[in-house]
Every structure is written in C-alpha cells, then in structure tokens.
Length: 162
Image (cartoon, rainbow, N blue to C red; front, side, top):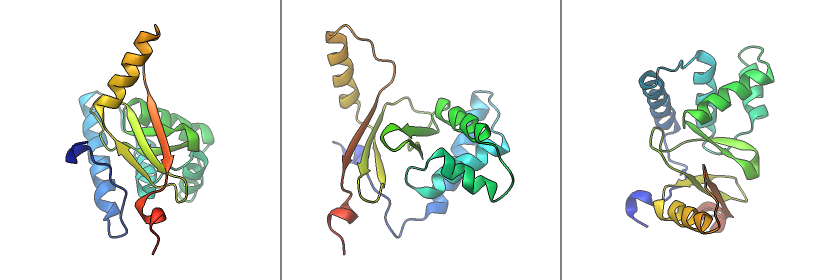
C-alpha cells in the first residue's frame, strides 16, 4: 500500500471544521460542474454527516435537523440519496449509516476499515482490491456495477487505549 493510500483515522487533535469546509466546497464545485442543485437541505445534511467524522444514521441526521426546523424523514432520505449519487457520501450497510466520502468526484469503490468498538472509520482507495473482486466476479460470469468492502476490526485508539 502506498503512503497516499494509507488509511487514517481521525485523531483527537484533528480540526473537524477544516474537513467540513472542504467537503462543502467540494460538493458545491461538483454540483456546479454537473449542473445539479446543491440545496440548503442537501448542504445541511452533508455538513451534519461530516461533523460526526464517523458513520451516522438517517434518523440521527433527522434528529439533528429537527433542532433547526421541523423536517420529515423522506426529506432526509432524499438528501442522502442525492449525496450518495453524487459520490459525496457512502452508505455503510453493516451500520445502516452514512459517512462523508474522502475522494468526491473521483471514481472509486468504497473500501472501509470500521472500528467495532467506537465506530470510527477510515476509507481506503486501493484499486488492486477492486480489480481482484472484478476479476473473480468475471471468472464466475458476473458483472459488478458497484462494490463496497467493509472490514471490521479495532482502530489504533481502541486497540491501544490510554
């Protein structure tokens, strides 16, 4: 694995606001390039997903949104679907949750290291993993359209507490 693809978990000294600002700027640019509307609700949902720095469920997003104003569940699901289609968030099936994409606008398959203890997450981008899955699928006569690999374990903080 190259240094560029080395996964990183958020550290305690990390500036979350920097990530949130970059994610929102990237989303604006991507939507502008693809002539898509980056509405206030889509912006706010993306911001809430990135504020967590770990996977967050749709109902958690809804609860946070309702602190600002009354919001219906379908509104949140539509915003999350849009953000997922735009490649701005990934759905983590094993946790039924969403996380901000570390590589928006770049075609890639999701590969995630997920801590079973604290639910922190690191996104990988290793083409060899995707290629191996695609080759194995093709050998079986199967065509892949999208793939998400979720690897459960312990992050450095939970593995070595203290």
